[in-house]
Image (cartoon, rainbow, N blue to C red; front, side):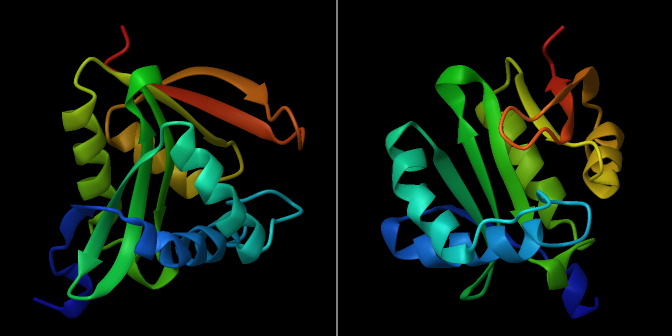
Amino acid sequence: MNDARQACELRPSCEADYDAIAEIWHRSASLPGVGPAVMPTEAELRGRLDAEFAAGWQVTLACRGDEIVGFLAIRPAEAVLAELFVRPGSLGAGIGRALLRHAMAVMPDGFTLHTRATNERACRFYEKAGLTVLRHGVHPRSGDPLTYYGWNTG
């Protein structure tokens, strides 16, 4: 089995992981078509984490050994998958699928999420995983086109 396809371990995040979460978030969202046209800096994303955790984020990390290779942020009380990002060098290795399966297990009654409509890879990923397009809209701050998805919401 090649190294890129090795299984990952999921674990809850802790405050010591915030820098790594911000780094993955920034690097992944900076890929073409993924994040906004004006991408926040890694420091700005790191600064946002405290507020997101205080507002109810539960973050699960995907790890290979000591390396964090992806993260999932959910708000179970609102049935929302807020963020799912995989380190760019680890894309296509099943990490996103493992994180998405975790969200499905934690929120078995369903959840919603949105992604930029230009993020074709994410759209294919969610649709292949069985999520349903609920509607199209625009991001309230950036005006970017969004696609809203639901899982087990019908």
